[in-house]
Length: 114
Image 1 (tube, one colour):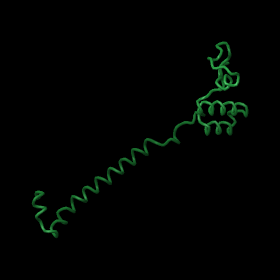
Image 2 (image 1 turned 90 degrees about the vertical axis):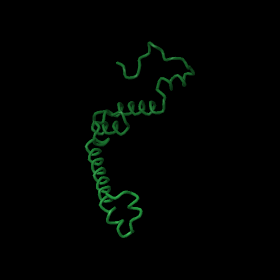
Image 3 (image 1 turned 135 degrees about the vertical axis):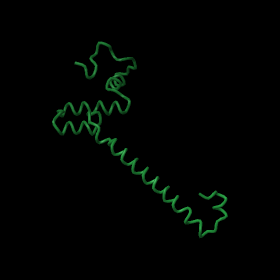
């Protein structure tokens, strides 16, 4: 392999034949790397492969459409999800309506408890 100084001193018509094999090797390495990255990402799957547990509005709608939730259950779950997303709860809303800012009453039943 010629030294870098020899390549710089070489005539332009000799430069291409000496560099072309290395450019092709570099192109092959880049192409092989892209293929490996594509295959790894494909084997890891997508978000669509994740089981839907109903903790998204889309998931709740699907559960309601399948009949897993009644209309009332769907509305309560949707309201709770929206409140949680906004950073509020129905207890906070009730406190605001009542004009109190203290903690919720410990004897009061909590949402989701039976």
